[in-house]
Image 1 (tube, rainbow, N blue to C red):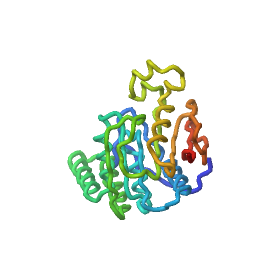
Image 2 (image 1 turned 45 degrees about the vertical axis):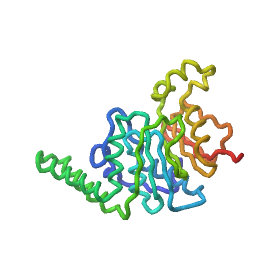
Image 3 (image 1 turned 90 degrees about the vertical axis):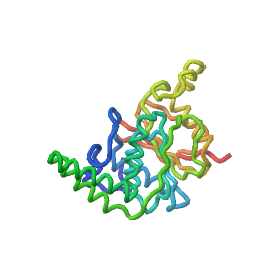
Image 4 (image 1 turned 90 degrees about the horizontal axis):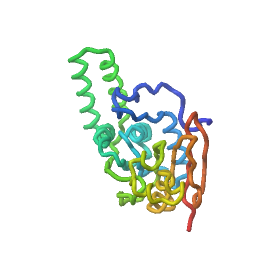
Length: 246
């Protein structure tokens, strides 16, 4: 894939476990790729500022926090949800970095660690926190909540861009309802990706831009969708689409 909107540079300040927190066993989304896909979706939006951004499989909130730090001029509100309530505390901590209070609290935490243990990694983290802090030109309100990605959504505001890196597995691995997997009559119905797309397109408006990232083994159900862009990046496949107008 050719990058059109996001430059190639050193992204080490965004490394998981440095300033942003990671979730054990959950890979973090590549910074440059996430930013590129967000900006590609933005190019298809009618509005270029005041974007309400949502990740329905947010995990520890890493992708949303990165996008918030790098695209503050265009984002007005962030929503984050996941069915695994155990990761939402991490998501809240990461997304707090989009506020001056949260960033300052994280800097003080890292300073204390550096003072107590004197490890080079802590000193580097403090330096990264200073640089990330300098990116803050405004604060982005964030709403974090528990939800099954295949169920009706809670945000009452219209979503402009939904971006998510979906789990790479079948329905039971998504943490969804096992009963649906047991009673489904077709292989398609058993697919968590099918259930996700079905419910998202039912719940969100026709103007919502969807950015869905899968692995190459997953097949996106495209019926009723208008595909704007798609492509492969390494082991990942991405789709940018909106639902067809009724």
